[in-house]
Length: 158
Picture (cartoon, rainbow, N blue to C red):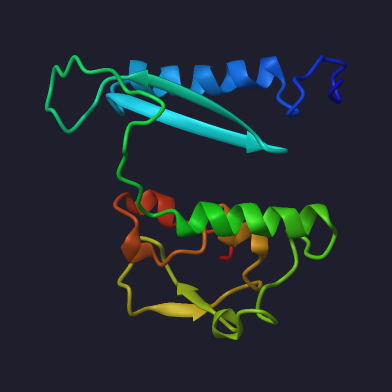
């Protein structure tokens, strides 16, 4: 049984949580964000695969469904992999989300931020607090020039 009293499979998969994976994939397909998706979950040697939608590389209107063995382009995976590792360390109480990260990443110590989020990038002031692991995991520590929508540049480190 899982923490909610639900029966799980031998590999430790909760049917309710696997349904949530399907629901997330369905929402992405329904919004048109992606034409198809494959999710793979592995635990204790058991692998569960969800494949939905159609192939993208055949162009709009492709009728070829995604499959468990569909080869997909995989990019920008460093952040989620590092985030999963960091959360494992948080779970083990080795790291805490609201601790400064400058001990591990000295280049992030004594950061400067924009004096005015809508102002010129050259006008900066010292940050009111250090960058934390939470800032890095929620991607709120990026320079304002990286955000396509300047409203997002109002970082909590200010």
